[in-house]
Length: 124
Figure 1 (tube, helix red, strand yellow):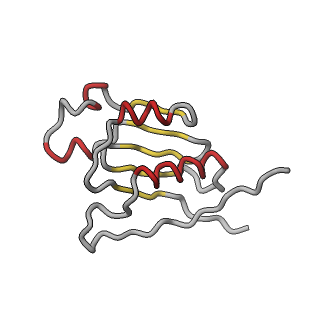
Figure 2 (cartoon, helix red, strand yellow; figure 1 turned 30 degrees about the vertical axis):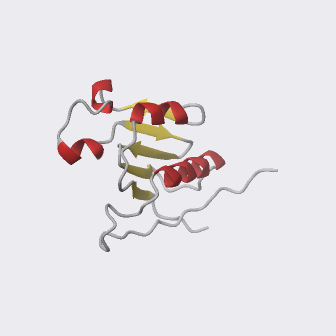
């Protein structure tokens, strides 16, 4: 069985910044949600300009897949290249719906492709 490479994939919103406290409450029932910074960084009261929308304030974990979330950017990653579980697939799908774009802007540069991944075989 060949080993796939480590999964790391960044996604973006273009004209929307999420309220991360609200996003955390939506995701906490299905995944583990960890606050990375103080709550006042999440309400937009600190930070300047565009930088506050790309600073990761939350980590969301499934089984082997995690995501760092910022108001306009999400980075999905695995620490070790292993097959995705069902919860990992659910986290990936949730993040791709919330952060629908694979580059920072609508301009035609910075395009990235999603890395390949495997899903573990279900045990029946």
